[in-house]
Amino acid sequence: MKKIIVPVDFSKHSEYALETGAALAKQHQSELVVMHMLELSESIFSTTSAQRNEENAYMMMIANKKFESFLDKAYLEDVEVTPLIKYHKVLKEVAEVAVEIKADLIVMGSRGHNDYDGVFTGSNTEKVVRYSDTPVLVVKSKPESVNFNHSVLATDFTEKSIPAVKKALQLLTKLSKKITLLHINLPNLSFLSTDEVDERIAEFLEKSKLSEAEVNIARISDHNVEDGVVSYAHRHNGDSVAMITHGRTGLSHFFGGSISEDVVNHTTLPVITFKL
Image (cartoon, rainbow, N blue to C red; front, top):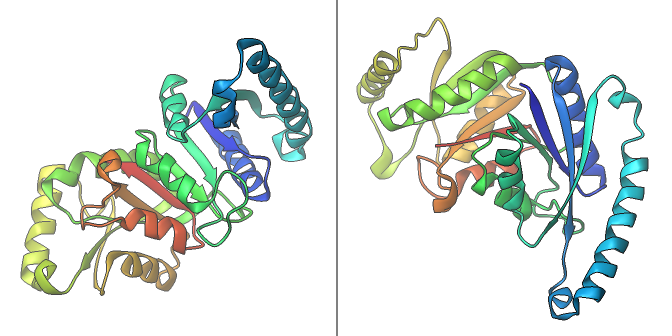
């Protein structure tokens, strides 16, 4: 990885993301771009040009002062750090900046849906994940390590998932010692027999040119995907979860619904998302 971008709002959770990004940058000799998004109020657009310039200059001065103290961290020593301040009205611009600067990874902190202060509440993190062509790593707590021992990637093993799974594996093999591709068998119309699951996985491995020597394959049954992937990760010492999304069409996972959003918001494990 050559470049990692960390959006921050100077909160505790964005500091968790900053420390995670710093550890990854050291590990991979990457540049760390720390970005703060200045939120613009609707009222500023009805003011005169002179008033807008004055308010923009004041906001920029405050942000620079906060950056100076926020980036004064021992764990940033020997890391190439580039501060970046952007104006925005919508959080999808984080994803656009990531593409513009050719970032390999976005690292974000998230509080989930139970807290509403600051920029990176659960819903705002979802917006970044939804619009991002760049993989997003979402963290909820201070990192113990960025050397993940076991990453669990949920997939339905369909042919259309192959490009996204291969894209995910390119990054996950750099971050994790063991990767499990997990099929979650669901009730009702989604249910597959054991033979049907095995046949689908065999076709997937053949067409993707992957082998069980490269990745671990697991099969479980559960009532829904989010419970299945989180439960499997906890029972098998998984220390990160990876999800594949459909992005702008509503962040639906292959299995349907807003499952990636649910996993991001309801597990304490780091979650890495990749867009189909």
